[in-house]
Amino acid sequence: MNRLLTTFVVGLAGIQGITLAAESRPKLVVGIMVDQLRTDYLESLRDMFGNGGFRRLMHDGIYLKDVDFVVPGGDASSASAIVQTGSYPRMNGISGAMIYDPSSKMLKPIFTDDAYLGNFTTETYSPGALRVTTITDELSVEEGGKSKIHSIAPDAAQAIVLAGHTGQSAFWVNEETGRWSTSTYYTDPPASLKDRNYTHPLISRLDTMIWTPLKMGEPYPYVSKKEISDGFRYTFSRSDRDAFSLYKLSPFVNDDITEIATEYISDLKLGKNDEGTDVLNIGYTLAPYPLAGNEDYKYELEDAYLRLDKDLEILFNSLDRHVGKDNVLVYLVSTGYFEEPIVDNQVYRLPGGTFSVKRAMSLLNAFLSAKYGNGAYVDQYAKNQIYLSEKTLEEKNLHPEKIAEEARDFLVKMSGVADAYTMADLMSPAIPQLETHRLAIDHKTSGDVLLEFSPGWKVVDDSRYPSKTEPKQTTAFQAPGFIMGPGINARVENNPVPATAIAPTVAGKLRIRSPNSANTKPIVL
Image (cartoon, rainbow, N blue to C red; front, top):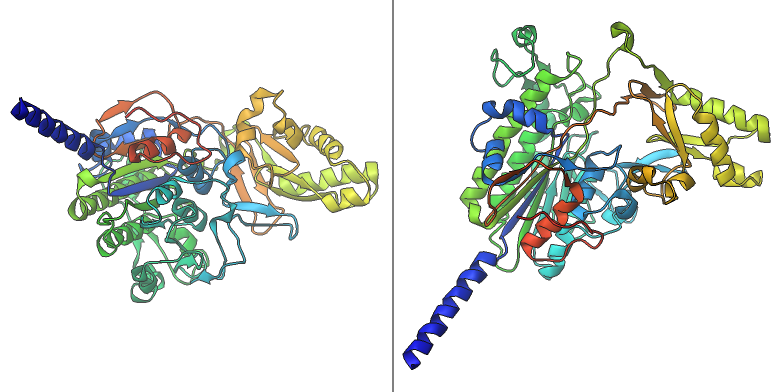
């Protein structure tokens, strides 16, 4: 009887040990955001990929073919915030990398914080504008602050979002100097990356960078034979004023980020932390290259996909070698939007036109001046929004909501404007069809009137220098995501998955609390 009882107890202990081992938290979490990654490109290039990058994600993890971000008008930082927090800009506060500052009447970086100093940059940043917790924040709380948390991305806003409030470091490329920059907010920036600015500076390598097709002369899907025959060739000159911004939109920035990430994994011994789970969050880009010779960017874009595939293989091999694939949880997600090419409608006789922001603001100001007396009623335009002058309205004792309604009714009659809404319209639960716009804006920093433009029109923001042209399209496409790690069975999910489900899903796999603003159910793994 005693022997039977002993056998039962030992067996039960063994089963519990196996269960605990199976449920043990991964030693390293690698979160990857790929700006403008598209499912259709992945599928068309599948046969050209190697086995260790995108194909590995497709075969070994959960392949989410349609991650739905729901809200319009995103960028890399706002999309990363949605994924990391499990909530939309209305709640998390991050509607984009730039916000309008009424005091200066200028756009400014959303994470500007004069309480901190820039490191290799004159800009001062902190994650203070991020009003909720992220996956990394919740993990840090669970681990008692013992997790190592680092992020790398081309742009400051995305790197800051990926590091969360509790990250030891966040690094990005300064467009003016080409240096990897950070903020004194971060307490433990890796010395190797700061040293890189001296030992391996971008400015010393820029003139040697030449981007030509990875598979020269070979066919690329949907690229014409003539384009294949002509090829392409891009160089980067340190004397070019836009050299560093162009570098940040080329595959070379992904190569450098991969090299830095692998150095972090080995040098910082990520995943070898006996006291907690570590995090490495990475931002990559597949943004269309602005100097592309063909109107649809396809040749350069497909080549960038193939090059990123090789970077992912290098990254995953480093994780296998230094941490072990059974100890790493990887999730990779697109940013869910795509910058459409600017097409000359007149050449192809397509419907559309050009909307001049400067002209629209001038006409609106003239309309309000004729009605209420001369004055500067319109402050600025930013991100499809018109900002009215609070000072002028106060001086003339005018009710802001009433003037916003009049501005809306005037602007909606302009060519190229499909519709217009006041902030009161957007905040009203009585208009459910505006829910996506409502979720996309942060009412604390939003303008007074939101414009919705007609498809096929180009919006030229000529109210500031340099002017910027943005095509307006409503074309739908699928944005992919992947989750790969121990205990996750490979499968393809064809149904749409909310982008807000990623954070609670990763949190559930780590057995930690979801970010405090996340309220979407996790994906069943």
